[in-house]
Length: 309
Image 1: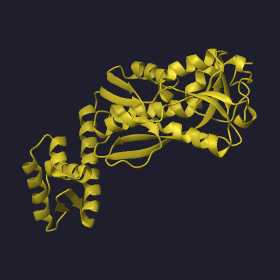
Image 2 (image 1 turned 90 degrees about the horizontal axis):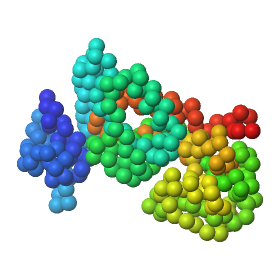
Image 3 (image 1 turned 135 degrees about the vertical axis):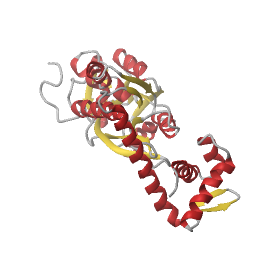
Image 4 (image 1 turned 60 degrees about the vertical axis):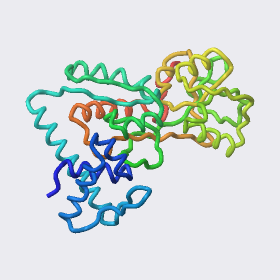
């Protein structure tokens, strides 16, 4: 039977595509990783990888063996965590990555709750955008992160989080009535603040403008969410954001929030985790609270009391 070190070596080689990269990831020698793989292959009587000058390629049988190995490691780590925490209450560290979409409105209530019910949980939050958060999850620096839906990345596990509606954000002097649905086609050419081209939202929004003949007078690029909100609240510039980040503005008159229609725009978000590691009990609990809070404030059909009168 393969040892845990051998299984971890196999997972690393499969995901990294080379013995060199796998040895760096596992803090081991290249020959040591190679020996672990050879031992598994000898025991099974099959080749799991095809070696070539560019690295290694998993065989057909290896794909299934890799998935089962990941499941076995996750199950064992979960059992270890449960045993360590039995009778002690929840404690330990949680490293989570959140986009500004979630930190402005959803994070504080969750932190307030968890600090009261489980004060021994240590929480570290990294606020960034999807690309850097994905890299940190893959590197094992974060237990999980909340990001927009993206294409598959090796070594990352995805699960659905929430669908949220996109809204136009503007100054009260811009003239839109708080909470009313608006069609961008019916507005004058927009002076709009958009993310930089490195942000995946930029392509999505520009495709929408092109597909629906939305006139744009000028574009300002800004990846600072707070800076964007401050600018559009005091000028004739506007922006488009997920409703989740704008919840605080629905109860004030600093900015007006208008759901976009004809057609509606939605954003889908997912939870990403390292595929070879299970969430600790404390991370599982923290994520559960986040999901509940996000679900409670994400877009639903507008109720009369959702906005200020």
